[in-house]
Length: 215
Image 1 (cartoon, rainbow, N blue to C red):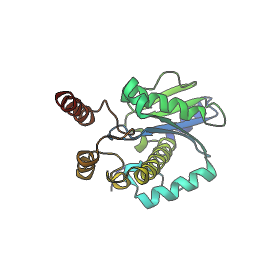
Image 2: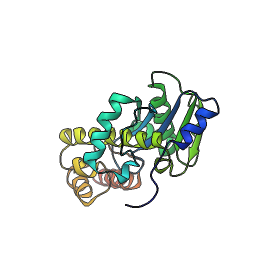
Image 3: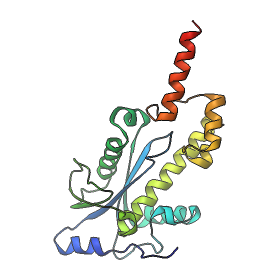
Image 4: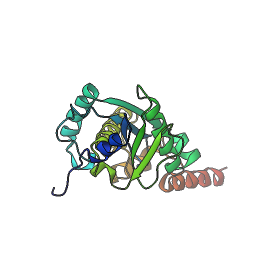
């Protein structure tokens, strides 16, 4: 795929303006019908940045896994989650913010600045923050966070697929694929489904109506 690769310009500029510790922040899992939102915060060592970092969507699964392991060795990494119940209670955006706050809180030290992928910097991060649309394609730190968040969430969904087989989560990671729809039709809704998402909400509503009419 052509196009500019993320670099360390945003981080270097922040360092030049007095920020000693800069983290990249990104999340994974806003759109799926099942599973948590996972966010990651990553502080890179400028002298030991793994080659090949890029937006997680532009990196193969095998390469993501390799970069994930390397980042665990050479970077400061924090991971946070927002559960399906929290997604239902707060909505996807606010739950994503919650996961980001938790990810930053898991870093060994509070960063001076967080570079966040998105239109808005979440409130309450505990540090200064700047948001960048398409940040995972601009900043190496955000790209690193996108990989950690994606790999972590994918592994969660594979583990859940073993507890709840039949929905295809090991492949679709909770997105609304044909296999997932088929699983819902035959097996019903699990505790890990997002009950405020329309396909799940509609299914539960129809089931409630059927139960009521059968009384």
